[in-house]
Amino acid sequence: QMLAKHPNISPASNKESGDWKKLTNFNPDELGAYESYLGQFSHCPNTKYYLDGSTRYIINNESARTIKKFSPNAKIIIGLREPIAYLAALCWQIGRNEGVQRDFEEDLRSQSDYTTPNYFSSVNRYITEFGFDSVFVFALEELQHAKTVNAIFEFLELDLHTTEMPRENISFLGKSAAHEKIYNYLIYGALAGKLRNLIKAVLFKNMPALRQNFDSVFLKKANYKEQLIRKYPELAHETKLRFRGDVCQLSDLLSRDFNTLWGYTKHQLKMPE
Image 1 (cartoon, rainbow, N blue to C red):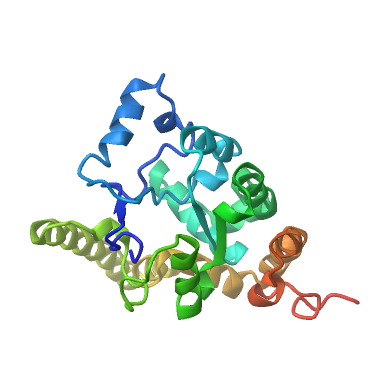
Image 2: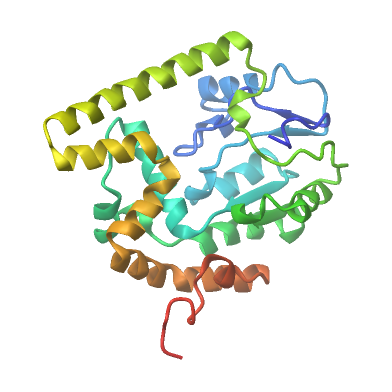
């Protein structure tokens, strides 16, 4: 939201504004999707940057090449989180989009497609297309540090417009008080329904349902990771080992120590030297 609030940056009307699966928003032959995408910036004045905050382009192997063709001088900012935390959030998003509650543990055990290590290859594709000078990569764990925020604005060659640290979601920008009231009504309504299910589970002493509803009410989507570590520590460890090579390659590519930051060194994983 710090970027979206900058006077020289105009964000799209929706944060996740692009079609990350088929990339139709970048294709003039897909007239409806293309015009709809451009229309999300129609409210913007002439500005130095137009901001598309879609986070899942990186999953699509063709996105770097397609975006380069659409906007050759684009500046790419990629925020990465610790792999298990990233997969947990992605599992939640996929489940929300599909209208089902996915089993994160089962997805990891079966090595579902979205759980394949791909940080290095994804970032490398963007660097190959745009060059190191046009790609900025940071770990989300670093975003609360002023040094990282300053570095992002320096990368964009912009003055830091505010000292306020990242806190809220870009999706709320430009919304009226009425929007916020409707949003809160829907959220609290959904929460009330979950609380009712929780009370029913307590009354009927249904322990599996009780645990599921407790997690649903009191644990946020990012806590899929904490649930996994708590319930299946061996699986969490195996997943880290599976991703370690990818994290090492990413660290070498960017000359950054993501291994230590995310707990993927041999010592942290208790691997033999």
